Every structure is written in structure tokens, then in C-alpha cells.
Length: 182
Image (cartoon, rainbow, N blue to C red; front, side, top):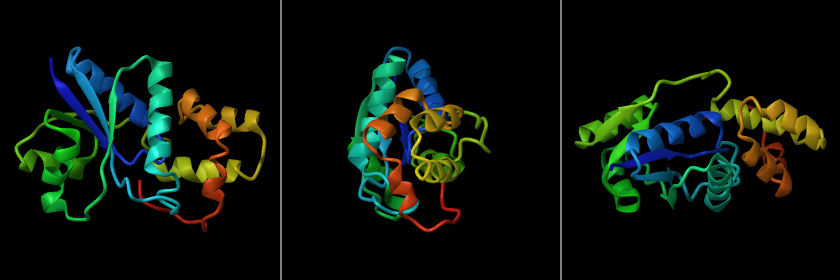
């Protein structure tokens, strides 16, 4: 049995992330899956509208719905790529990194990690900034059914429901328009 780690900001947790976690669960062969929420200190910003606790709640809502057992940890960013893996390992532990992110793969491989690469799918739809922009537009509509309909192609239903129940979509409407990081 393996221990697999999926690392991301999850702003918000979308279907691309869900695919990574499912791939990690398969690769773990019954072992542990750890979802590591990066940039845990970042919140209420255009690229990071939700807190680490809110992102963790989204991941856990999805995992219950998808029946995927996992552990969630939060990791503050240190903005120091050469020392990131050592810093992050203190929180997420050792194992196999499961990712589709090239720079993250390079960092972990350089640190001696085994990396299981998952091919990107539907990148044009499942980029975090695109999902946030869609949520931003929907936050002005005030129609839960419209939000469900529009977001279902990019966001798991449990996360959509979490966003609606916690009135969390408005967060994206508080920032200036612009293209931001993943």
C-alpha cells in the first residue's frame, strides 16, 4: 500500500482536482491519500478568495459525496521553491506525489520523490482562474439553479452546494476583473 499526496491551492476544488484525487486513490492501492492545501495563509484575494478552512470543507464535502477516503492538511507557502519540498513534507509526509503540474513535478523529482504524473484533461475549462471568473459572474445573478447548471461542467456538485449553502460565491465578486494564476 502506498501513500499518495495531491498538492494544490483548490481555489475552488474543481473537477480537475477531483480527477487527481481519484487517480491518487487508485495509485495508492488501498493506501492513504493526502490532500495538501497549499498557500494556506492566502485568503480574501483575487487568486485566493477562500480560506484554507473553507477549501478544506470543499474537499471534504466532495470526498463524502464521492466516497473517497482522504486526509487533508494545510501548508503555508514560503515562496522559496528550492526549500518548498522539505517544508511541505513536514506537513504532508512522504510518499508518492500525484500531480499534473510541471513545475511541482520538477521540484519533487529534484528532491528525490517518486512522482506519478496524471495527464491534464479539459484544461481550458478546468483552470482555476476560469472557474473563479465563472463564479464571479454567477455571484451577481443570485439564482442557485443557474449556478448549479453553469458550474456542473467544472465543479463537483458537493462543492457547488457548499458554495451555495455558505454564500461563498460572493467572495469572487469583491475583486477587480482580471486574469489571475491557476
